[in-house]
Amino acid sequence: YQMSLPIKVIHFIILLSVSLLHIYIAPYNKVEESFNLQATHDILYHGYNLSAYDHKEFPGPVPRTFLGPLALAAAAAPARLLLPAALGLSGAVDQPEAAAVGHSRLPMLFIVRALLAAAVAWSLADFAQSLGPAAASWFVAISASQFHLLFYASRTLPNTFAMALALPGLRALLLDGDWRSCVRWAGLAGLLFRSELGLLFGPPAVYLLATGRLRPTDAVRTAAPVAVGCAALTVAVDSVFWGRLVWPELSVLLFNTWQNKSSLWGTQPFLWYFYSALPRCLLFSAPLALASAKLAPRARPLLASAVVFVLAYSCLPHKELRFVLYSVPLFNASAACACDAIFSNRRDSPRERSPPEKSVDKAGGESIVTSTESRRRITGNRASAESSPDCPGRESPKAQGESWESPLLMTVGRVFCLGHLLGNAGAAGLLALAAAWNYPGGEAVSLLHTYLHSSASVHVHLCNLAAQTGASRFLQLHDAWIYNKTEGLNLLTDYRPFSHVIAEPEFADAVGLTRTCRTIGAVSAFDGFNGFKDLLAEGFSGLCWHRLLRLRTALLMLEKPHV
Image 1 (tube, one colour):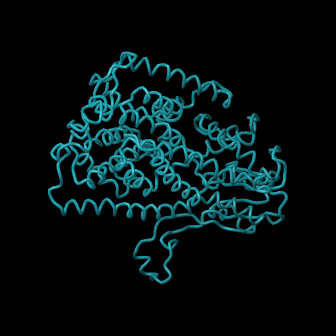
Image 2 (spheres, rainbow, N blue to C red):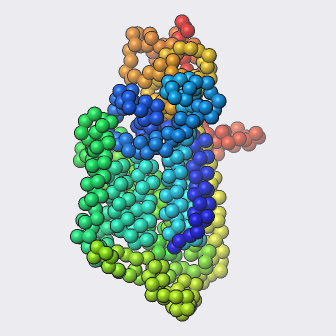
Image 3 (cartoon, helix red, strand yellow):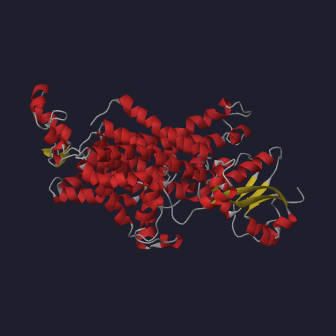
């Protein structure tokens, strides 16, 4: 299917708008996003001065690729140069350490995240295009009504960069039948950013090989140059930044699988993705995704690929929701096909899409051609198309698929399709509200800037929690200030140079900081949802959204007495 460009742009704008709303609600970052965000900042503000880069001081457990941050920084570079003058701030634009440049860092955080969100939103809109007009609109509505997919779209995770590249590959393989294009996109996404994508693209590739639709020689001939090129690119670029010969994603693969050191960050049961992560991602769309196996056979490859990928990834003991984020668009596409089938008052039959035709390409290999293209070649012209039993819209009622036998069942199905979007949106609103309170480190640093805006010199220590929940270099607005994130300091000696400390209340009480320092502020963080019994006990008079949340004091901002 090929939709008009305006429709595709509208879908892109809808998806991007929701993602931008998430950026506005929760602008800060977590530790998982830290490397790519800090690297993007350093490329923008330190350039060739690699000794000033954050990874030199905090390298992390495994090296990561700089290719994603380089792409983001290149896209954001014009804004980096023009923003200080555009904001009317003092200082020369060409002075990287000028005060004006420092104050432009926070807006640059929004710009960098918005650029990444735009890349993912365009990939999603492009992926939807191959589903057909109605199913594409359902896909966009479902994706926009959920929380996690578009929330993560702007997060500088390796998984997010990989998803922006994997979606065109999934479209090429599962919807367009273009395995050569799929190999190129999968190579970029898997070899550069997330090697586990082999579990997503591998099973469909094995199916093509087993059914003879893909010859091994053609697969090797196409994949080998991609693999060599990607490996050469990442080794050449990342070895410069890390100062040693390194292929980051290979190091990550060995760390997580062969050495199984990812288990040090916790483990989950085998089925955790199915009973915890995916229900939170899909919300009320999950039943429709499952129903698509019966209602829309064209969605079965999408659904099967997603389920097999999640099952395979479940073998790794350490589990996080972001690891299976690539499967969410496949589940959403399946749900969209089910909604399309319900509203068209039919259950798709295999005749809706003619059997894939094999055609020999220039290289001598076989590639799957979409049914739409096959019909176009077979019918040849409009007159013959109208008489063809395989032409969409010209099929007999029997060929179109099995109609719903019960009008009541059809009505219930349509009501659920529409109502589940409202349910998704309500749940997504609660999750977004919780996310807004989930970054106390970023809030604490921003509040400290507000309280001490006139202070010329500040030496502040950021505790581990603050560093992990938003205190990135994009928030270091004052070049005269010293922002210290060193861990394991001795209270009696190492804390003497600091004028201010951002610390957890328990630690501050234990070492006596609350007795020797003045508390100038506190930041609360999300600690769960209040139950309905708690809300009933308090009464519903004056009920507002924040009363649904249970908050705790996460960080204290302390000022030394000599300041």
